[in-house]
Length: 152
Image (tube, rainbow, N blue to C red; front, side, top):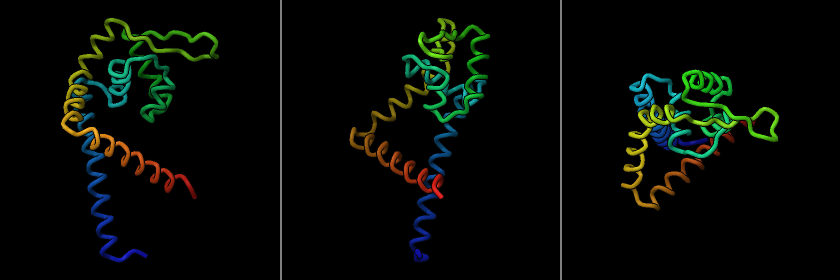
């Protein structure tokens, strides 16, 4: 069993970590709210505009841990607005790549370019070693937490 002092240290550290996670989420929520979209739609735009490349709905679900139905609804709505088109990937059963239209690109940029610049500038204020350490330690914590949560 943990000593009371050790337990207090863990509690304080977990509280701080959880507050930081929530604070980060609040920053992105604020950006999405200002644009008049949901947090999940924000991540779809972020993927298509900032990450570039070719993505299917499943890819977006996997990248951001989003439910399939949620991404499907967002993509369907954006497609109806003329911001995206779905293109079948030859040789796959029903997989489609999401293509952003010129109109979609303009709209998407208005949502995500400013936050990406802020992220990039913030990251550049850290050393390469600090950035790598931040990523590695967060990844390690997530791996251990998943292990604890998902195993009996």
